[in-house]
Length: 370
Image (cartoon, rainbow, N blue to C red):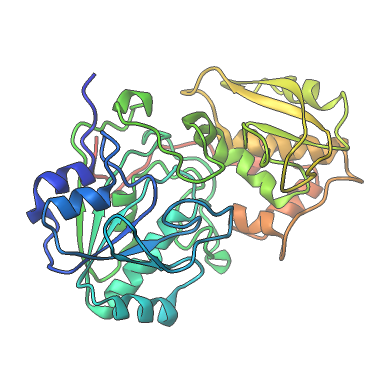
């Protein structure tokens, strides 16, 4: 099976696609060619003027858990300095970029297709820095593992803009990083090195590309598929499966009981089945405590609606366990994940999940692929 040619593969074969003479590469372990050669090594071998590396959340080597990163260091293979960008924006980020001496920033990180996954917001913040500093910006495009035919979920309220959503795009946005970069609208010299051979209706398996974990709790394409929905559980005291081998597919709580799995199954949600499951997280919420819940089994990815599924799980948990379910994290983090101040209140009011989630649509405008 032929593979999709990513922007990184195309740039390694044709260095003129990037322009610039002093390049800074924003990357992590997903920045590889189809033969698993790191993009850093491939661009150095191709003679591009790579002078600095920049790491996002989880770090350039991908060792850190959620909301963590790695310290500035030196890449042992290339000898290039590695700058940590996590938690930096505005003037502090400008200072780091300016001190690196680059004239072009190059983004090569795989996204997972959900608004609250932070890599595209690292791209957003660095595009803003490039605009302020007068630098070029290049995106080496990669597939959206959820495909590109469906968007689902609301546009966020600008008042809730944050590192889990800086620009108004749906929760499942249906776009590639290159398409998002064009949507952001910065006054910057932007080049998207497009993929060759990618279609919007492709599953990740059909791309022929290796799956490299985008972060420590995103082990498989199956995880990415459910994440736009079950990722909402990060804003509650329900376990979203961190500390297990199937994060975001396993969910539960110590207070869940025998009613939970049948209540979810009775909803008849499209494309998914629920199996009762017990698990003991090794870290994060309820670490070391047996937890009862379910595993999601997506049997029809084309019909599956992850956002509606996540909302339905929250609705059932609130209905069955009103005295136990709690909103988790500072400032009602669930509302920040959702993108407005409405969700927690509407869940407490018992609203039907179908009334909370707009019908899915197709991404429109400024699309690079058919």
